[in-house]
Amino acid sequence: MDDDGRWATARRLLHDHTIRTEDRLAGLLLLLYAQWPAAISRLTTGHIEETDQKAR
Image: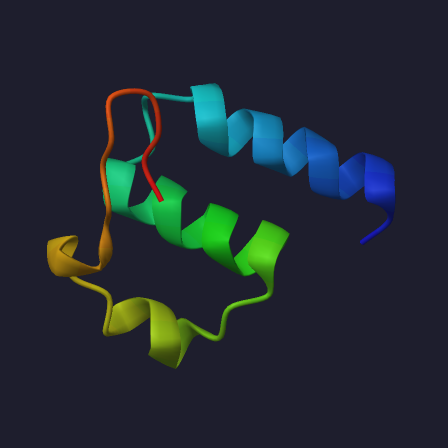
């Protein structure tokens, strides 16, 4: 996938609410951060840090 295709897919995952939220998140982690599906499947809400203006 070239850069344009990757960004087009990322935009779709960010904005297409017909795709389940968990699928959108997993797709973005795979696409943008090169996370393996096995690593993504082990993530829980405990892995998310929230502040007033950021989530990481």
